[in-house]
Length: 529
Image 1 (spheres, rainbow, N blue to C red):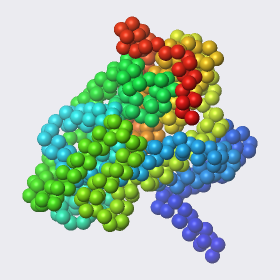
Image 2 (tube, rainbow, N blue to C red; image 1 turned 60 degrees about the vertical axis):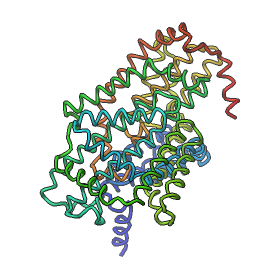
Image 3 (cartoon, rainbow, N blue to C red; image 1 turned 180 degrees about the vertical axis):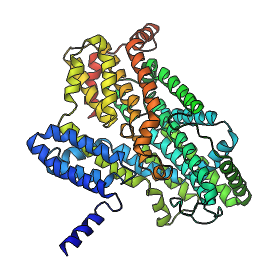
Image 4 (tube, one colour; image 1 turned 90 degrees about the vertical axis):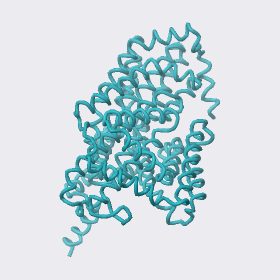
């Protein structure tokens, strides 16, 4: 009986995950307290960070919320961090949480419009190179003025729609029939090879778009949360922020777009697969059938969704309200005028966002461990001890490495505060502070595309319901991002070492930007309170 009960416990623990994975997580939970009490909390903190990254890497085996959450709970219990610090990290990212809860759900109610528009783009643009470049550029432009997570949610919604349409037909069903597109057992043999190629096609579009969000997000004050944080500390407005970043961000943007073209032409690193002709034919048939059966009520709903989408762009671009609150208005407007008033129909929209919101909260618990144990302090101290001439590139590299394994906003906050303290102590002047702030911002944005946990948009894509459907694992994302990581990171490093300072001096001389005083930084924290 006890043996039987033990087996039942093991079967229940983490459900359908492989047995080796379950034993691995159990061993983590046993080892961590031993390391904390023998080698100390700092060693345990680094071990916890490595373990959490492992749970992300195994996201297709088990959603990271449960194993990562168990590790986070244990971290609090053994004193690596406290509930208050975790809450503080969550409070500091409340806008991101609201964004996930409401904006992703809002996009759900615009999916008919998005599918309508992108189906025509898919059918109209025959060249895979041009289509990939279009996805990358569109994601970059939108992310520069909107938000990377919002743009990623749009791309996921579109690709999920494409996948669902083909998978239904490949399973021998009509467009009208209900279907579980996560079940491959019903896929007919003659469609299996096309389904494999279509998955590869969608993976490449998703990765081009995801990288595009990073390329555009680094350029403007509103592109990423850490951009706004750094701009507030430095006292930069929208135009000045763009100009100060431009010596690094614009060459990186060009390099990223060229990489997109070369990857599709060469067909390396998992790119280059074109849409199978059968799939294109099915998509064309779907578009024609939808046009044929579209009623006046359906057309009215599309008009409402289009107007709501316009409000979404205007609301985000003008910062009419917090991103999450704009998302809530999208839900209200899109549902009110399309007749979606039942609670169960509203609930479906939140299924994608809420698991990731919970996972992000666990991620902030890990960030709290990094903060309380000051895991990054030695790196910061070393960089500040270097000669002034190489501090900028060193900050760029250090921020890139740390942001690839941690939270970009956290890394940016720590570094900017440290550099701000050096400014207040007179160790550096204000112009040096501004150059280092540029290096910090680009460092937290560009090299962090190396891993899914380096960018919130990448992590959202990895843990989305679409990722297992198109076989997009942590390892595959790292491999597909590798050429982008190398090209973008090296371009950014070269620009920060050679072009940034002379280009900034030239902008001072032309009057495009102005010199700031140390007191402007001193005043900023007070204004924030």
